Length: 355
Image (cartoon, rainbow, N blue to C red; front, side):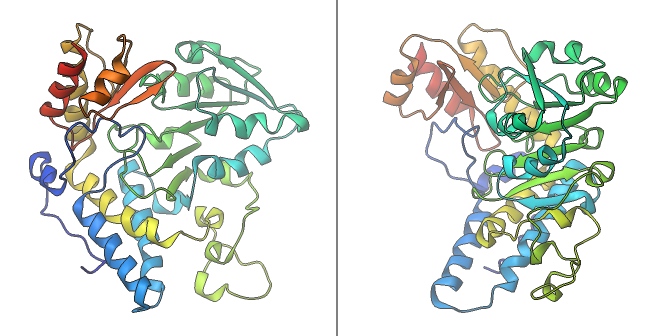
């Protein structure tokens, strides 16, 4: 397979797309890691085969990072020049945290995943202060003393979808920056990324890429405040003319914050991201939330608006495991997550185990 190409029929519908997976029944744990579609898996195997025998140079693998960047920008609906690539959410947040002046006040949910909490807390010795409140009180807690609001688009432990527009509106009313970790939402939940100052996403969950690929949207006004402390050859205006020697010659856009890409992660990422774009996030959201609500209804719970749900059923972890259902346990509750390769049969298998 040519790793530089992965084409799908225009306007691929979700039913046809599901033919690109063949998961073992009972995978309800995309919130931990996503399963690659066949084109992504085959592209990765082809690249690994090339690497094993030294069949090619590395430039073709590196080009997949740019292909992935373009696809990610398309998913978010933002200019490709506003996207930087890296490896983890916290690494992408690091230059923002490092740029905060002493006395900065950060507001975040108490339940926030620590990749979007520790970077701010680590600046405490410099005088950066972090205040946490319950996630459902985040918007009302933004005040005149708030300089930056950091939160997850979808909460990792519970699947709760943030009041994104309300939090952004409150932050703008008080002149605060908005930093969003969309790792648990990007890939199934449409949102207006350009409303934030920064959006970070790890790609190994709902974007179904190998772990080691991550992306960030950095608004131009925010980039002006940041120092690219991890500057490297790939962050150069022309990476292939940036191998050796001074002067500093970094890209003028968000690429100046790039890490040199982990090749094979992006080889797998590009086809997966392009497939998501072919299907369309609204259709994926409808499918995912419908399955999540089927699961909730089967347990007598009210419907929700998320692809991630949590339930507190006695012995649930053991009962699901015995039935071959793979889910997660977060904050003492079973967490089930549903993506485009999930089926009603997966849901019913889990319900049979829990009833």
